[in-house]
Length: 211
Image 1 (cartoon, one colour):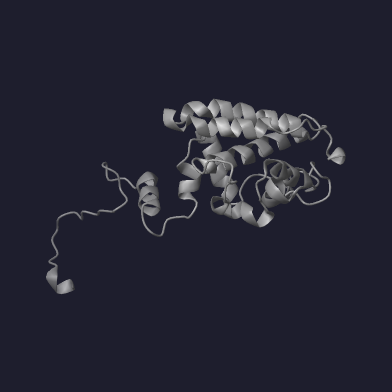
Image 2 (cartoon, helix red, strand yellow):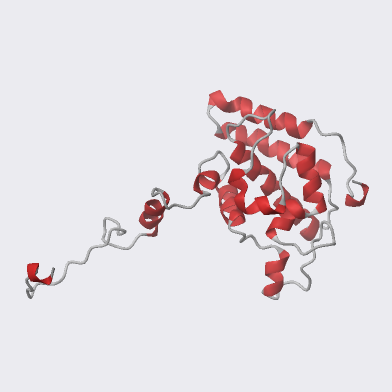
């Protein structure tokens, strides 16, 4: 190989397959190269190719990588004194616990008729929809529910509001209505089904002990 090269006094021309037009290393080019190949991450389509708003997609990206700032992480950073879940006051608040393992979260998924366990949280893109729900945009529905559980947790922790299924479902329904404008006109029936799902739940008392 070296025999085919002849050295000169001219400056080197260094090129990289991941540089931009200005010959600077580009993280965007690297990312596109990775996700477009067969070795790309399994959650790419689940997180990024749906109708959720950008901030919810970013939340989903952190979620499937177990990187949202739950209390078990905050305790390691000495930001809190306890890692106990404030929704159930029983177990450590990890990502999987908050989204599926907590008694409150598990009750929420049961009310929607969606089977979700702690082990499913890191593989959300493999969760199957209800037979009664449209398969189209189901990824966005899962992200909506997880996002609203996270927001509900914030209400409990930072606003001293009691855990409340009725408030959680109202938030889900409002988001479903808002997200309808993000879908093609032909797919608007999907969010109508979501709104019906969140609206068909009976009124629940607000405190978790009365579930």
